[in-house]
Amino acid sequence: MISNNDNKNLTKRQKKALETKKRLYDAALELFKEKGYKNVSVDEIVAKANTSKGSFYTHFESKDQIIIEHFKNNDNHYAEYYKNLKSYKTSSEKLLNFAKNMFSFVNEKVDFDFTNVIYSSQLLHNQEKTYIIKEDRSLYKILYEIIREGQKLGEFREDYTAEELVKMAARSMRGTYYDWCLYDGNFDIVDNGVKYFSLFVEGIEKVK
Image (cartoon, rainbow, N blue to C red; front, side, top):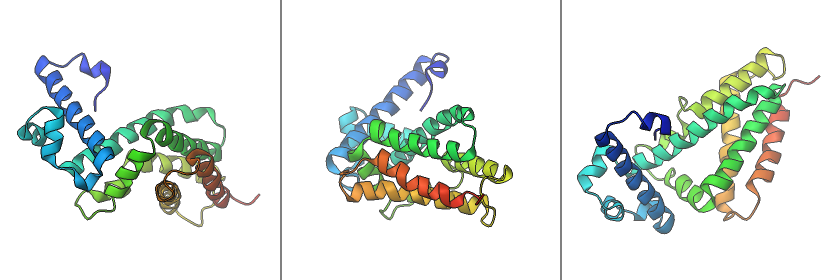
């Protein structure tokens, strides 16, 4: 979306447009949680947001675009947290704590029900479903920065490229999210996620 500081510099018309977009976004997410992504129509979203269909398509190309917006908002959070990782001494600590923050964020701010909706939607055959694995997402750029730094410092093995290790790291995280959904959220995603991901980190560390 947009920060509060940026919001101060907008015209009344721009602010109103952002408010409408947020209403549509929030209404869609609420309906997705309540009825499931594939069972919600654009007509239902605009009715709940008390706006028009034309207004919806001014802000979003399709229903899929709302899911993408959600992932972008998550990525903004990860980018902000990445700035705090400088206090950790090793790349292993940075990688593990970054993963822990991701699991905690999903658990506390996103919650199980919505995670289930979001990840289920990505398995449907739609044009935008590949956003979750797009390499230009800030999430993957952050993982690359940490892993490449670890390789340069001699902490991480180099028989795999940084790009290959990023894909492995992402699959490890995604696997935890999907497993959490398959088990109806019946395990602690933070504790278990960190436990599984620490095995990945240990696996890419150079043997000393």
